Image (tube, rainbow over all chains, first blue to last red):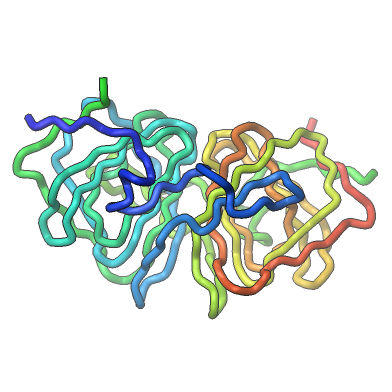
Length: 163
Length: 163
């Protein structure tokens, strides 16, 4: 089985797929009399012309590494942000390509405190927490279209952590 | 000093101020081949006609109870959702009233895994985590107006936990 080693999640490495949502670097604004740093407007949200933003809560079962990947999906009509509600590592799987078939698969190990926003139409694996409780807030498109395409990999891939 | 005892955060008690964002009750949808529950579209987002949704990250210094409250604020042009990125209790302070002066003050102790969405214009205290890291994702209005009103309480209030 082909093997992919999950890389550390960084804004630079993830840029082709979307944004990393984290309190990194210099805050854009200090608010609340100095008690709070605001890292402002960090996700390129895109819900098209007939969709709107919504906040949903996802509760997913934790997985273990190595992880067997056999399915990718994408949402052609909107971006999708995942915000972990626990300070735990989790696995992010994405693939290149805008067409009906995903291209090269990339895996990232998100550190505690890192969320992501997937660009509209970005191929990705399903939500894969590595620890309980597997709780995430999801900011994605609310609309009337199915907004889901799935692609079953002809050959499953094994995703591992770096040594 | 007047004292307010923080109450448990429940959807019912918080309804006058907005929504509790949590994985509670029956999920709206089971996705990802049974591995994930989706609690769908749980926040009444409202960014007016000339605003848009944005995701920002807030990092706030943890506070301790009893907490001395002397300032409330509100955002007249948009709702504001706070999603904790750690599984820790935190303090939510809100007040009734739609006018330029807040009415009755209410305090809630949010349990680990509970976020909130404040209705547009709802008077509230600044972000008050009770534990490190004080990391939150905030879904609020991105726009060109100041979108901030502040009210200094003539008499500070002490917020405590229940015994």
